[in-house]
Image (cartoon, rainbow, N blue to C red; front, top):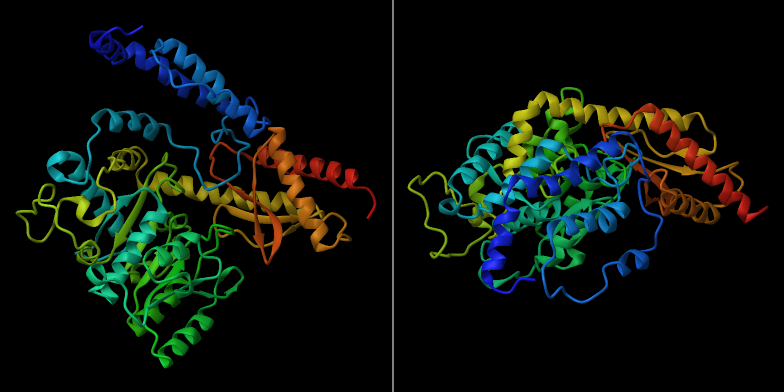
Length: 490
């Protein structure tokens, strides 16, 4: 029991030792070790209510010794957490994080510096500027480009479209959005972050116009026709959003063709490369983002295909001044300008966040540890794993493959003997995924393509092998047989 502040301070000092840290870090190292061996279930079979019940109870009145807390984390948290580091996890676009970045997270938290203001974080603010310049160079942006780290692709896209709004409607920060309201054109499979941003910027959801797709990529001819239609009706266009690595299929829009169209029309091109922009680092896959240098802004999530732990998003802009123009506020109690008139060092003037965690450090550490080539090799390996999934599925007529994988994502559908109708197959595919994931044998996701329920894998773990992929396919077939058998004859 803590009777006075001296007891509290003593506890804090005791927790700041290497021995105390080792107790907590051992949870992570043990987790990495057991998942490396493929031990244990990938996910929990317990219900949400069962899990929630173990955390019921009042707020603790008195403190508990660290060893007891560590034991409870192991028992009540880790035991039923999804194991993204397990080689049979093939689910969402969240990575099995690189261990060097995980350990660096502790240093970031220990320093606890906000990189919104240079004077609060002199080394890490400089480091963020340097890393951003590296990434701008990687995509082919010219001098004067820049950007900022973000919490993820949603914030990055929102910030980019805010900058596009500032360019199209310079008075909107002070006076709001006037008529005629501009529109944003995006593909029908665009991430919801785009339509969310359009609504949040005061344009209204109807101002997000979806362009149809061909083979899950934006139809460039349809985009050109829509631009011509809007020009004829004198409706202003604020931005075009292309996608490098669609969430559902991993497909890439034809960025070069869309960029050339935007250049000719004088339009702001934003690229949602949250998932796929890492292809720019790869010699084998860079062609998928050909023309990326034409963009005015790019969203890029290192916590996806660069395998950093959350959060680690990034926004790059061709002109850093356009990004700073998006935030037309003064805060002399924080932002004091710069002696260098060509570059404002404070990151808070170009970011939504004021209390900004120094996540750049873990990105810098990974770049130092693996280099561009090492990250590219990991990226290519994950893409190869998706090809291996396709190769295994082709061997079984019970599955229909819906697209060739452009990256590390593949969608497919259980069709059995192909006699069931689409509605029945929708229900079967839903149940296959639910039963398979609940079994703990593996973990996959699902989505809708063409209005139909399909199964989806995202290969985010370099530990996964051909043997794990075969186990996935065999496991799905086994579950499918049980599901179809339980339904009885059609």
